[in-house]
Every structure is written in structure tokens, then in C-alpha cells.
Image (cartoon, rainbow, N blue to C red; front, side, top):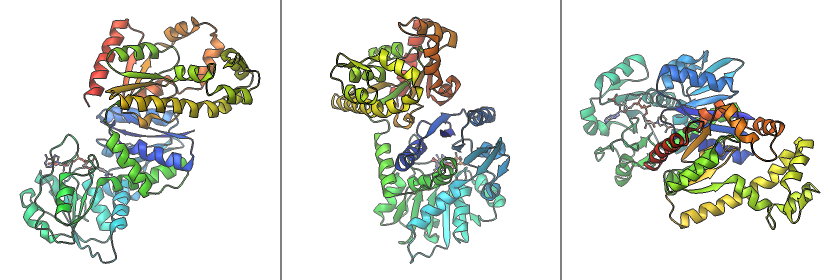
Length: 476
Ligand code: NAP
């Protein structure tokens, strides 16, 4: 199965997994796309990238603060990345790392999408001189705009950009932005002002030309004060969401060998995801391999006020007498049902003899478990729950990680885990090996989780870790 990821720091807010999740579902592609938090040092970045390449990932999207590191780590760079010295997309192939900068095409396609035949763009003012500003400037230049100016709070950085990139024609003092606005056809906010957690961008744009387009690269929140001010003044606007969708296309197409399109359906889906992010109840995924201590963690999280749902318990429910899985399993695997319920023993004997039937069983069970879960979530919403914990052993393996506000993985020393599991009735080393072989390697789960809880320590220490993690998640 092909795998890719987005890496950055912080990364929990990223919408890229949702974009890929939408396209995968649309194209019925079996593949995985995860978010990986990679601390903001060169060393950590290099380690994350090498680890993902070794784990068989096809590539990664790279976001703040690693775009320069992404350029530096590459063996081969695209002409666009070469021009900017910054990359946001890495592809791993035959042991080499290829870097590209798709922010440029992302911005370009977004602007081409909103441009009308009457539009005559000659000049643009970019606010900000950070990592995104040069990509925006190159996109504008590629679209034939000759006069591209930059204004930045730290004036030297704007001047440095002008010296580094010949397609930037001038700079404007930060204090003169409002009085200079009338000279430009396009205004782009490429600062982090207006982003969640940052101050709003308060700008008087009443002197703007009536045909000016105002673009904000920020997409969380979707509508910034700047966008609202421009709309109130009757100007055309575009948020950072379109650029984000377009910049994701090349990576998706390269890694999953399928075409991808920006459509109103994708946009609406992402707007819905943005609205739901951090809304109550918070959706926490709890995962970990067999015997790692998920049930202990789930029970403790319940005492902290979370409502929990357990995939294994759901399977028990649907396998039990009168359960919705009994009839389809009986039809697919005759002889595995007794006394009106699925016999787990008979079913696992059947699967040990016919391992190829795992897939068939999954096709029956997964939709039924999903329906059970949907009902649980619906009830939690009705009951105004603060947080719900979904205990899902194969959370990463089944490509659901993008649906969660936070993911906790429980882990323990493999030998301790083995001893715990072998104490269970009916468990054997062979059975344990079969279960483990269907899961991602432990190091990969640890890399993909937002929080990792160690359970091979005294119970109070596990609880203390959970206290801290739950407080951090619910503070969002
Ligand atoms: P960056 O490299 O950290 O640069 C931040 C810029 O914001 C700098 O120019 C900085 O000015 C300015 N700034 C920060 N705080 C300010 C303040 N209080 N007052 C005035 N200026 C301030 O960030 P980046 O990588 O360029 O990203 C900028 C934004 O673009 C982020 O919100 C990011 O999420 C967004 N983005 C969106 C997309 C998309 O697809 N939509 C793609 C890439 C980036 P100084 O130099 O003076 O510090």
C-alpha cells in the first residue's frame, strides 16, 4: 500500500491529510497519508525524512518551519525549487530524494481560477517576506506581472528578497502600505498575521482600486479580518484554502499514480472539516498494538471525563446473538456461527487455515463497525460530551488518522507486551505473530502519533502521562 505524509511543527492543524483523504475516497485508492510532527531543528527534520523514506513512504509534503531544510536535504531539485532555494514536496525514489516547490503552481492555479477575461494585472503588493513570499512572487511573475513589490515589518528582509530574486521589483516601507495600496492590482497577505493564535491583520484598504483582488494565504481561520474588510469594501477576495488545495495536487498524483482535481465538493468538505476542528466533542484516537495497554488507558481517560468507544467491544456486539454481523459471516464462512452468534474460535480457526479470507471478513465487518461508531458519536454530540476517545487498534492501518483532533498511541517493551498477551486464554505465539504482521511496525506508530504513552512503567506513571496529554488536548 502506498504511503505519504505531511511533516511540520506544529502539525495537528494541517488540512493536508483531509485533502488526501477526500481524493483517496473519491478515487477508491488504498493508500495512507499521515501527519508527522517533526521538531524544528535540522537534525530532527533529517531524521524524520530518512525514517519515513526507510519505512517505504513515497514522499512527504513539508510545511512550516522545514521548507528550507527540505530543499537542503534533496539529492535532485526541480527548476522551480532551484529558483527559490525552498521546497515543500519531497519524493523518495530509488534511494534518492527529489524536491519540488508546489506552492508556486498552487498560487498560480488559484489565481488563474479566479481571473476573468477583463482582468488586466500589472502590479502586485506582497505583504510579508517569510518562506511563502518568494513562492507567491514567482507565481505572480510566471503570470506575467512585472511590478511585484514586497512590504515587510522587518524592512531588511524585504530588501534581501529583492536582491535575491530578480522577479521582485521593489520594496515598500511597512508603515506606507495603506497609503500605497492604490498603486496595485493585487494585494497578497503572505504574513502569518490573521492566522489562529496570531494577531489579526488590521489594514485600512479603503484606498484600494475597485478592481483590486485581495488574497490571504492564511486558511485557518478561513475568513480573516483582512478578507472581511476587503469584502466589505466590495473587493474580490480569495482565501488560502484554494492555494492549499492546488499545491497538494502534484504530490498526490506522483505518489498515488492518480489524477486529482480541485472541485467545489473538495472545498466544501474542507470548510466542513475546518468548522469541526477542535469543536466539541473533541475526537481522540487511541491506538496501539495488541497487549500495549489500550484498555487500561481508555478506562483511565473515562475517569477524566471522556466517553469511550472500543472497536473490539463493537465487534463483540455485532458478533453476538442477534448481532448484525452474524448472518453475513455465516453466509461467507459456513460453519463459523453457533447458537445464533459468531464463534470467535471457529472463525479464527478458519482464518488460520485460510489467511486470504481476512480481506473478505474485513469487507463485511468494517462497515458494520463504522455504523456502530457513528451511532456512538451521534449520541455523544447529543449529550454535549467534551471529548470522546475511540479505541481503534488499526487506526493508522485503515487510513482514518485524519479524522481525529489528536491521536494517542500506547506502547510498551515488546517482551513485556508478549508476556501480557500470552496470559490471555486461547492465545498462542503463532496467533500473536499473525496479529502483529497485519499492523504497522511499532516505530512507525510512534512516529505518526501526536502523543505516545508508555505502559511498561508503574501504573501511576502511565496515569500521570495520560493526565498531561488529556489536559493538553482539551486545552485546544
Ligand atoms: P514565516 O516564514 O514564518 O514568515 C512570517 C511572515 O509574517 C514574516 O514576513 C513576518 O515578518 C510576518 N509577521 C509575523 N508576525 C507579524 C506581525 N505581528 N506583524 C507583522 N508581520 C508579521 O511564514 P511563512 O512560511 O511565510 O507563512 C506565512 C503564512 O502563509 C502562514 O500563515 C502559513 O500558514 C501560510 N501559508 C499558506 C499556504 C497555503 O497553501 N495557503 C502555503 C504556505 C504558507 P518579520 O519578517 O518581520 O518577522
